[in-house]
Amino acid sequence: MDGTPGTIAVLRVSDRGVGILEDDMPHVFERFYRGDNVGTMIAGTGVGLAGVRNTVEAHGGSISAERREGGGTTFTVRLPISLPTGDDAGDPSTAGDDLGAAP
Image 1 (cartoon, rainbow, N blue to C red):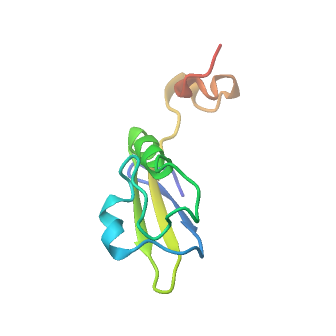
Image 2 (image 1 turned 135 degrees about the horizontal axis):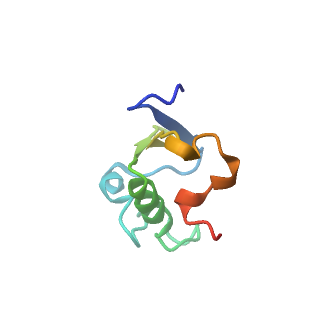
């Protein structure tokens, strides 16, 4: 990636789990939502994907999910890339300043 305006980073994560039912797909990023096919066999509260979505969107990105026949899911995260500008460009002492790092 060259860092020019409009450049994005793409991260794809795939698993080979039980998959997400087609009827559940519109709801996977809703807080506290649990798929009908996981029941008690997979522990969880339904907050993980909602939290990921909130974090990704807070950084100006997006997340999507794609189910695969026979099980498994691929999640794709897209985040904009921005380079430091002005006096901070290339200054390692300012690394993390925009992330709310403690002084």
